[in-house]
Length: 293
Image (cartoon, rainbow, N blue to C red; front, side):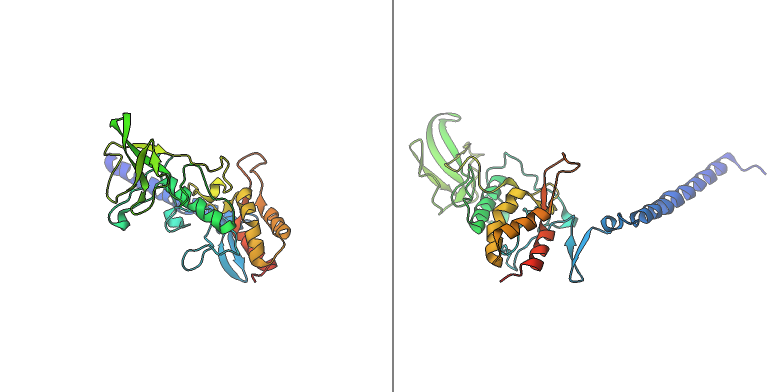
């Protein structure tokens, strides 16, 4: 007995669904799992986990913070680069801050919970903190001494032209003292919470200051990676931290540098990307070789 055409078509579609469900929903995933367990691949497919003393302490693929309960950096450890993923290195919230080079004006609200820092102020604050932690000059161009973006809102008589009538340091809230006392002969005011000086007609004017053109604190120490999970830092940032770590552990800086060298990866295929220092593995090696005093 010949089935009606519409029933035959539905049965053919059902058979196709069942076949592809088995192939793509069962056979293919199980085949990939089996391949991932082959020697040489299983460590990576299992998450590249790192253990110490029989306990899993992290992954070679995901960075982590080395801070105390209050969020302050622990001086005996090398510090990772900043992270914008959740509260820091959260793989469920991996993301960048989405702030770009034009993010130079902070939001100073009457409610502190609604205030937010611009990318420039974040960079300035991080550079200041890293400099203080490691005993180097943390100044950067376009940053104030107190670690915020050195930016003025300049008001002129004719909008964009004419004599200056008012100047506000937009990232320093009252009662802070502005980083420069005057601008073109006009006294600089601190910002008042809740005021939008750009919308009011102020021209955003970053001030470079007298910071060195080549800051002592490298870029990866003050900027988060795109994923927020970067497990490595640059050799330059590691070198910046060597003396501090060696002092805290009572070790020879040369020996600490040797450990840094041992835990530094070269460029991919010899020419792609930049060398990177594996922070977690380096800190574990330090704990093993130079116990903290």
